[in-house]
Length: 206
Length: 318
Image (cartoon, rainbow over all chains, first blue to last red; front, side, top):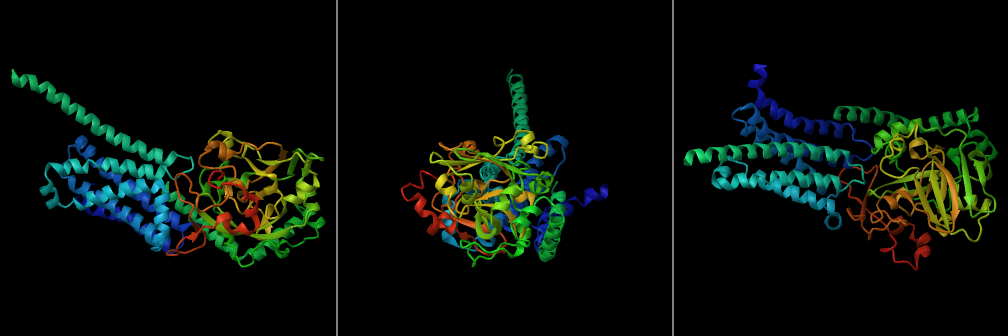
């Protein structure tokens, strides 16, 4: 167990790459079913969302366990979500459309589900760009505010998923439930902190 | 969950390719089995078509089209009565009972009644129809159906002049169809409809086979509608009832989301679904880095069917 914990960083990096390698294997052996391009989109989109969850779960885990030094993990998983989201976008532009810009243009213009995807990707891109330590230092308090947009990215990504289905909503609702639980936890912690602060305030003024 | 899905995909994919490669043997074996006494055998015998693999091709079948590999067609089909994803519905459709199938034909006709499928087939001459198939989900394939014109069946029951619409109803079999049993999504059984001129059009067929073989359950066995210029959901599967009506029927997807799925549902690249574009389509069987196909008005059958809609605003009657 201690061996595992001491190797946690390496294991995390490997964990981030496993879905990617798995996808490469399935592409190589033609294991993606009758519509492999759509399957590619689904796999990359799903993994992007899953790593977004993990990223969002880090702060609650830190609050519960009082472990320190987890911000590096949050950054790693966040960048990993961005990595899969980028592959998802490239898959659409290159693998699916092969740079047929006219068809891509019409597709984006007419497909409102893609608009949510663009919002989600744009936010993820901003967060990835502002993720290095020096950017964090330079942005100061703004960094925290900016990075709260991750919840909006997560909701937009789920809308992107939900909005392209014909009515069977179980999968996106599950994703949404997880986001609500994580957001709910943050909300409770915030409320608790505020109550504590209010309790302490009169005492200190007396 | 994910691991399980992949395993299933691996297994099915291997089977399909082998099935596809051995298709002629399999067809022969299937035909032998049928001749040996499966329910459809008398129909074939009566029809003097002992070999479905060598049926005459319909005049309307575009011979320049290359059919999508059978393995892909048989593993990529929506069948919401069974499941909301294509893999599970293909697996579960194996449970459907298709023996001693009969179709009730009723409404505005001279000769209403219950007709056994084998009796219907003994009256019809089967042909192969190679049609493009375009799903409302923006994917498409080319399918070598085996069937006969719906018009021929309708004429045999003598429609009255009052018959203006045709309503089709799918089988209600909740013991094999989980989503019917749990009453999810659509109103069951599934219902589709056509205007009488659409139903009588020679491109409109009832299909009983695919790739020289009887229809696999997931592809609509034992009898389904094929209307190649409309989105796939119009081509109702496992038909048990055909009614000729004075008024348009209420159809399943149209009543579920009237602003998204129209009664006509003609393939039209210029009329987007409210949430996604219909301008292009992913052809099954195409490889990575192959751009999507530009969708054609009436799925490329405009020359044959555009006159049916010459007076209509296709954006309004989508």
